[in-house]
Length: 218
Image 1 (cartoon, rainbow, N blue to C red):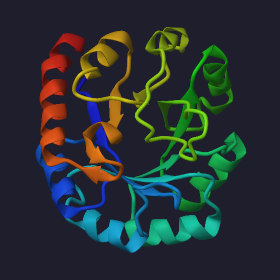
Image 2: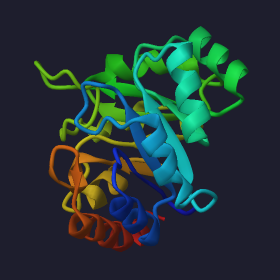
Image 3: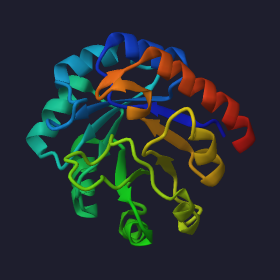
């Protein structure tokens, strides 16, 4: 199985083009005002149009209401909605019914109890993304550049399809893949020279590291 690679928090044409050229399967745009990676839906839509049909376009939101989602969906035309807030299974079903799009639900992980919350969402969310729980004082639910204990993933049911996120970079992605059954990986701050500033050289280095690690994983 080919590994999915998602580059998230994109905001420039150069970074979008480089991510896709290097083999990204997914690109993510973040719609959360507190994030340094926040982007207007109309700009995200223009960037997505550059590569539409070549990769999966992901809209990342945090407890967004229907009105906000209406704008994002109409202007970006995403392939996937990634929900990074406190959405309930009922809320996810509501969103899927309105927009007819698959949903990737994010869980922030620090300890086993955090993974125990996944069960009610199995069969509701189309895929999961496991990220590290935000450090104390952070206002961001993700993109904090920290990882979690990947050995916790061994307790997860083998039928659960998930992407792994949280502090991934060129130096640790091989270990992350070797330690988990993740079918995809998600990186944002790990390819940035400053918060929200994607570095083309770091994108290249990350994909080089993934290419070296993936054959050992698969």
